[in-house]
Length: 248
Image (cartoon, rainbow, N blue to C red):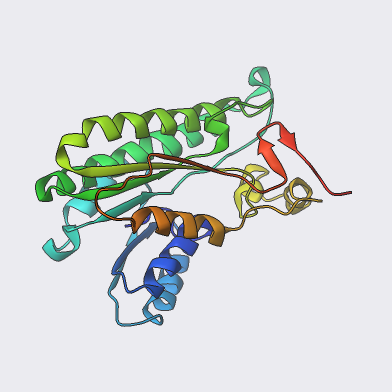
């Protein structure tokens, strides 16, 4: 099961697993994109795909949709909590509260709502793997990142806590923290301003969605006794949030 599957890391991850014969649950807010992706995934082989159109921010909707899955689809082996976003960029004293709410509701509460619906299904079966997509912004903050960074620090902490809580249930928990990646991330952050979004990646050989999908797949397909707890991935030109080298 992959949340936020209609673009970026989520879409690339869905394709990666489909090509390797996995049955897949994809979720997202954009129904048209979900339908297109569902058809694309089915073209990769004899697999089953189910598309769930809901917003992770709506707790009752999350519980209802996942709770009403057919029994065969409740046997979720891997959950990729990918849905997330950054909105706005500015100092804390000039922040937009609506942007703050959107980030916290999606990146933190949405992850919790989905996990609360899926984790008991894994506990009942005594196995499973939860993969939370965080960010290096959840390892070290940066100027103007404030609430986004806070939301990703929360994902880091929650991943560690989940690992402890679910240890006795034989459930793996992995936190993956990507660095700079060229996806729709900046376009969303700058609310559709493509010029600003493009400038973020100028002179930079950034990570791609496929790079992160490969890492997710690697972590998910290790032997049963092996768990990658925390994985930080950056482009070669990035050594940390505030340590980047741009080619001129």
